[in-house]
Length: 408
Image 1: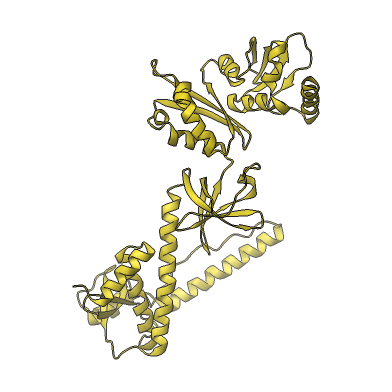
Image 2: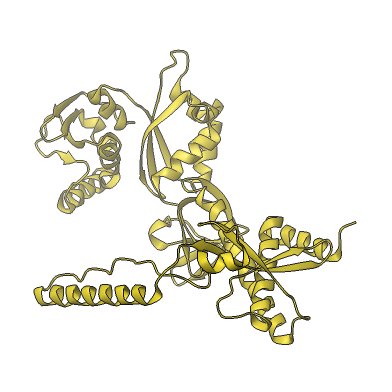
């Protein structure tokens, strides 16, 4: 049966989701700190080996054997380097330039290094670069202050190990969709509880039409994971077009298996998205695969996006056909490409004009983003075209007035 110490270590491992070796290393580091507190000397590099089954502890002074060093000559050389660096800094400041950083230099470290001549006095067979572990005597039980030091080290090291563990897990999940629970609001940020860690949903990554009620389950896209002094900082999004792509991959097996490819996504978060799909398989309908039987698949995706409308369009290597498809559900008469300006003039019938541009120019704007071309919609017999991406506010306002007038 395991000793009480070993059982306690395993319990910590289960609670913190850490490896047994990581917890044991933490305990050994804490015991080394306690030894230095009560019995250590200035230039000792103390390391401890601890056996949790028997409770036995061994202490060592660990040093690497290096060539003999003339300490006075080394100190003089370092002072010379410092003076040269100070002169370079002064010269750079006079010229108004950025001061150079001092080049790193190596000095003999008596705490971790041992000159070979001294090492051979105790270990005649010592060699350069050899690591020697000199046993140290544990004179008595640790005192109260040493025990307190060990406790603080254990708490700190376990917290660091837990943070590193969480960072490693979520760093590998950048670009994925994860499930969390809406937590508290901090100013305009929403805190999302992911279980082991909290993520931040900043205002620019929120969907304007969504309400984030505390306690509700939510899917978010992991944008970035960075380590800070306070631990891992996880930034997530609900509005990125990549989230639409990932949800399609999760809900549609043909996309997950790469039978159907997503060639592009254009999104007005909370309102509408356009997704371009393509397949090389002749017997597979890429749009039908995404819609599913009686629209079951696309309805599930729309629900995941909070009711956002989703248009699925067929990708085509022929740019003209792809732009025409991108303006779905409108029917297009012709597409004229201007390769130099990367713009496309699309002509439509009068009854398709409103469909082509969409409310506030949304349809043509999304088509422009999806195709990568500036799409200009022109009604046959009209001289005032509507531009896609980059349309002026004045033009948008005019078109909105036209739509309102036609509706009335």
